[in-house]
Length: 74
Image (cartoon, rainbow, N blue to C red; front, side):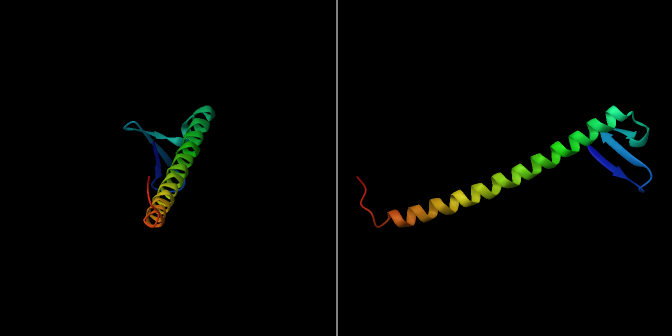
């Protein structure tokens, strides 16, 4: 789902290969579009959070590996 516009007055919704005049859609559909935009933004935010956590975990694993080099294993 994407929303684009050639100018600010005529927003266009592109969904599954079809284009729609966003202003002419019923209010309940506009609300669904807004809900999907919020969901998309939340997904991007959480994906970014997961990437940060993965990098942090990798850093901790490297630190653990370095510190364990001086410890005798069983």
